[in-house]
Image (tube, helix red, strand yellow):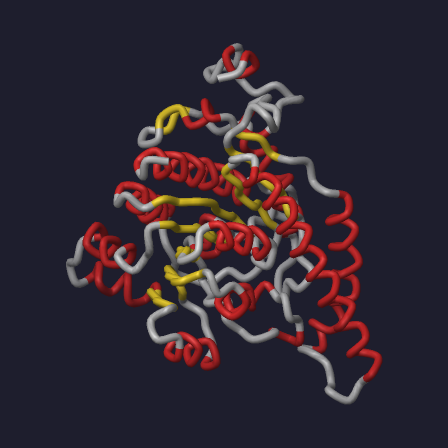
Length: 351
């Protein structure tokens, strides 16, 4: 623990100039580094998730830091990088160009003008991905545990790519209301609705995709799951809830879910995987979903199983239009739990 951390009082209120969770850890002092990616270029319904990282940062300062299952998580050091002005600029340009395409529901194949605009949006999104990949690679090489804080769910592709290259055979545990397996949704190669299609089609080192809480998907996505030959395991919310109604314990259900994961696991969390009462302002809310405790139990079970969580992301947290902090409040606490169980998993796995 550094001198800065030694002088930190976890029982005191956060000072205004402090960082994430009221900490003042520098990058060098911190084991965990959070990379904010404030993008919502292809968001196809409700807007606001680009404001998520800043909202989570602010809400985190009200989080009490002793965790009942993970203990003094803050002692490892947690540092949130400042938002990149380059990414902010790319998001503004990309969102401006993408909005009219989204309103049209895509473009006409014969339109040269719209093809040119669509091509620019895809190029901007690709530039974001490369920035995330490069930033993540630098941090991972310094033995940091890296998490992306989005932004829409397209944000963490570069981080997943970076971890997969270091851990071939990686499994992705994906919490979401949606499969995100659409192919270039509305013409956008890097759509938030296509993140997991891009993961399984463009990152061959990822061995398994385990999706939990899904309750909205199209026929194309179901066909991709069925043709994956077990590479994609889909746990629909309706089926999970019905198993509970029939008397099966959540522990038993979760044991079956994590059995499909390899030793090294990356956790990708779209906040709309939770019940929308916990994230009412997220971009694409869907009735149903996991409770906060159910989701945390799954992540904790991964750690307790001896598997190693290498990295993680949290996306689609959007503050309310009147400054409502509830979504960010939930997001900040979920993020802290993810950090805690990631660190525990690395300790349990002998790293």
